[in-house]
Length: 282
Ligand code: R5P
Image 1 (spheres, rainbow, N blue to C red):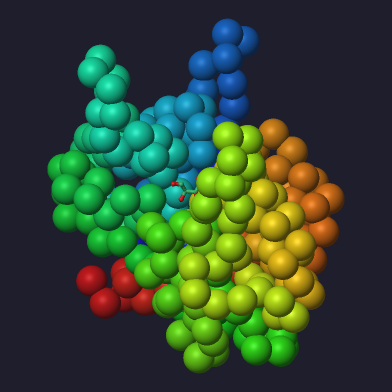
Image 2 (tube, protein in one colour):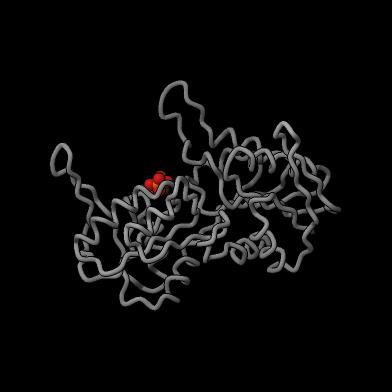
């Protein structure tokens, strides 16, 4: 079995290959003058692990080309991050179910699929091959333990992320809660933990994705007003679009923690061991 990878997932693929003691295939990527993508893979062999986060449209096309290159092998697709997963419903008539479109396109030609904290697990049913979703909540919890914080409070930005916050919190037996929005007036909204108080506490706001950072920036501002002593932001997928990292740090957030499902300077948690474990146990 050999490991191949798109440009967006070269670090995670290297870590995964090491964890599984598998060879990494030599890959070459380039662009034609009109912007079309080109790639060439070395010898892929008869069974491959294909690692490719879909972070944007180019990454999607590169992954499609790579899967095509591997035709004829038994292919296992590792999809650490799946863009378009947030359009998991037709919210308005005339809209596509984008998550389904992407799942159908990239799920062809592979035997098994591994996703990591996919935005909505219901999406797995759209893949034309068996798909397993892995969670990095314990790994994020383990990283938080290394920060040696004093009785931290783990907060989800909304009720939908509460289960994830609970899984992170169980790594240290910490308290967890979710933020609740209360409309104070036509223009004023208050965000505060539903049951617990942030006063005097070190707080970690955890979510699956940080995209613009808007949710956490708003929450952090209010939690500092409520007396939180330090605030950290942690997520699995650091999309960090439009200057989100700088905006978060400018709010006074102590640190931004994400994983290498999207490779960033703040990717402090690796998905490699968790994915390797799932591939070993397949
Ligand atoms: C939304 O459903 C996700 O779970 C995140 O809460 C969202 O993507 C965060 O977005 P932003 O960083 O732009 O506030």
